[in-house]
Length: 291
Image 1: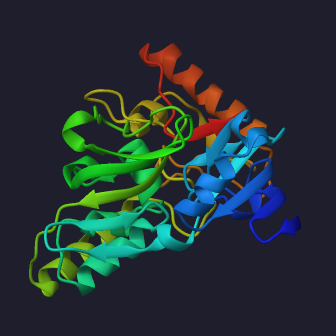
Image 2: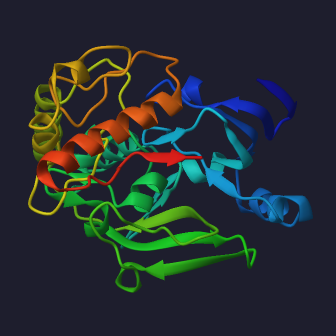
């Protein structure tokens, strides 16, 4: 990994930072600390013509071995802040879910306890409408503030204007989620802490710990559990080897580090085929795989 200037990293290794410890390089990753830097980046003609990918916490994104030849964007600085106002919280897209949950506890703000167990960032959370324990980010969201690269402008859209669905949030082409505005409800800190602890216990009992893992591999089909479909469709070989499923939860990986991302993609296809052959259901990936 070589650095050309303070805001550009060339040949950025996604494997080094990915939760799966796998993935190809991003040829040019730009660190963006504020809206001025973002505007300045996209007024460059050579940048405008290239595809771009926003890199959050790399907990739900896998870049294939060939790498990403476009522009990587890493939000930092202003986008890591949380501001509490009288009627809403303004949360930067780069704020980690776990951090926001703990921040809300400190401020006696309830409703964000479920984020304590999610490894991603708020931007990624809004992008995919992440959730758990029968809660989703859309339930707390007032509006999304985003940058439109085509128009080189910042817009805000209310949640009522957006079609959020299960694992599908704000996914408008050529945009970058910058902030979310969130609802505020106050409650006793002891109540908030007990709920955070309860969710943490459930997670530790039901999901693999201290392994290279990206969260759920597949979305749950309607009225079905992906892990049940997987478990009933595969044989013992899927739980062994350098790329393997977790015995704790069959919709999670427990792969060794530095495994080929393309091999992981092939392994996912094998699981999909087994489930389709047995149950006539094609599982949809929750893990984003970038060509």
